[in-house]
Amino acid sequence: MISMPERVTLVEVSPRDGLQGQSHILSVDQRVALISMLAGSGLTRIEAGSFVSPERIPPMRNTAEVIGRLPDKEGVRYSALTPNQRGLDQALAAGVKEIAIFTGASETFTRKNIGCSIDESLARFQPIAEQALAHGILIRGYLSCTMGCPYEGDIALDTVVGLTRDLYQLGCYEVSLGDTIGVGNPQRVQTLIAKLLQILPQEAIAVHFHDTYGQALANIYGALQCGVTVVDSSVAGLGGCPYARGASGNVATEDVLYMLNGLGIETGVDMETLLVANKLLCQNYGFPNHSRAALALQSRLKK
Ligand code: MG
Image 1 (cartoon, rainbow, N blue to C red):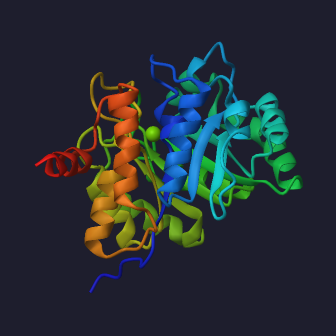
Image 2 (cartoon, rainbow, N blue to C red):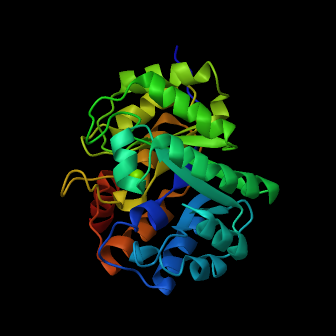
């Protein structure tokens, strides 16, 4: 008998990972309304924005103002992505309790994405991590391309394992394994996690799977079977995939929750409230609805 976790924590990434690549830019009011509703659904971890250059990533401009206006809700932690010292300074000023840093398992992807080698990216994040830890701020690490790279194709598992360990040793309490182009399969997921569990505690591993090839739920299920209890997802599957035009990117929170509910795994998240957030995003704000579960549940409600 395979043992599954009794409880899973969903990390909601729509307000950052979901919105950052969109051409449609939400106002501060709209972002605050979305995040507040997500917090009201029972989600306890929400990536609220990023402290990046507003010229480079316009949808993330005014993240400090957004964070300043979020409801203080017991048990809810808002985080922000901080790519550099300037970002960290802004995050500290905004009073965030958790920051996220990132690198990639592919040399080419990392160069194209952040303009430096993987080693250089880790070296750049070292002083950021030291300061964050000194301020008592939690650090989450993101590792992209863990299942494959849009430029290099296959990525060696040992490379992924080594970099996950590097991020953990840098001070990340948790490393989120990203399947940036959605090419993973449950076997690779389980092989990777089994290797990681030899060197890291189970609590240090989270998964961030994309649904580009329709594999996200299968891959998440595979991770759960290995004991993973932290899963990243995005309401309505918000978050375009820049490597496959028109394809879905982030796995939809509603779809993950539907599966977890079916498996009897506790999350503390209320589907009805998520559906209201889905409507806000898709009907009011005009984003496409990539959640199969939300589409099915909403059409059932109409009858
Ligand atoms: Mg993503």
